Structure formats: C-alpha cells, structure tokens
Image (cartoon, rainbow, N blue to C red; front, side, top):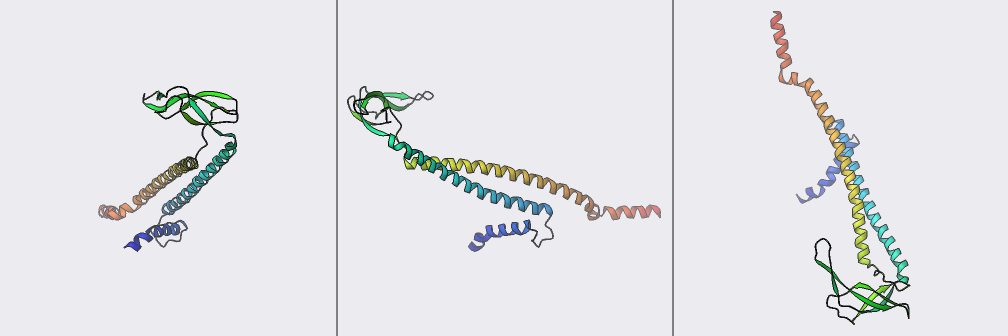
Amino acid sequence: MLSTCRTRPTHVLGRHLRRALGAERNELARPTDRARSRALLFAALAVGLAALLGAASAWADFDSAQRRAAAAAPHLHRADAVLLTPPLVATDANSGTAVRYEATVAWTYPPERHHTGSVEVPQYASSGSIVRVWTGDTGQLSAAPPRTTRLLLDAMYFGLLVAGCLFVIVASGLGLRLGRLNRRADTVWQCSWAEVEPVWTGRVSRRHGNDDSRRG
C-alpha cells in the first residue's frame, strides 16, 4: 500500500504525458481529454519555472542588498552619545499605544564637531547616561547597518512575492483553459447524445414501427 501511494504521483504524471502525446491506449480518450492533459502538464511546468524565478529573484535581491550594505559600511561610524533629556514615549498615531522611547542626545563626530538629535533609547535610560549611535561621515545620525538575517528575510519575502504572483497567473490561465475545455466537452457530448439517444432509448424503432403500422 505504501509503495502504491508513493508511486501514484509518478503514475498520474506518466498517464497525462502519454495522453498529451497521443500514446495512451484508451479508445475512450477524447481530443478534449488530450488537450486537458497538455494544459495540466504546461501548468505544472509553469509552476516549476515560477518557483525557480522566485528563488532566483530572492537570491538576486539578497546579493544586491549585500552589495549596498558593503558599499555603505565604510561610511558608517559608531559614536558615544550623552542623554540630555529623560526618555519620552512616542505613541502610535492610530492606536495611541507606546511604540518606542526617544530622548535628545549629544555626540561628537568627527572630532571637535558636536551634534544633537533625537534617538530611540531604552525605557529606563536616565539623563547623563551613554548610548551608542550610528553616524555618517559628516556626523549626522544614520540607520544601523542591516543584519544578514534581515537581508535574508527581506529577500525571501521578495522571492515569495514574485513566485506567488506567477502562481496566481498560472492558476488563472489554467482555470480559464480548463473551463473552455469543459464547455467544449459538454457541447460535443450533447451533440453526440442527440444522435445516440433516439437509438439508445428505442425511439427510432418505435417511430419506424408506428410508421409501418400506419402504412398497413
């Protein structure tokens, strides 16, 4: 039973491949069935390509982000800043909840060039305490260099977004194609049934019998 379950996807793939190529030994297979198998195989191939494109996009985004971070690293510097005011809570404008604590600090970078500014600090920091800040070459405050894990997560999200968009396109195209094939199959079936139904139900023989009795 386990071996049957494991080989089932391969068996289904092989059956659709044979049907798409017209090599299936099944007299009941219709042209729409072969077209449906071709559509499913094309969609499976497209999904695989979408996954590869998503992975390639993620890697390209990560590599680009690493290059930007490496180029910016020589221009980022750490400096000791002194708290001039107690921390003040900064609230979210929509929810009104505390999101961070900020304080005015003073630092020196480059040497003999003094700066002041507002930075995020720990909640229980006190005036006169020291915090570390990141600055650029001119001494102005700058964002901290991104961590590698953050770059990886951002790249993964980007790759998933690319792959997800492609998956949606493939699924939409497959749905449209299968819908058309189903409507075509229904039309063919109705036309065939219109020809077979009188013979199947005996209406043709009864009609001929009635015509013969009338002639008699």
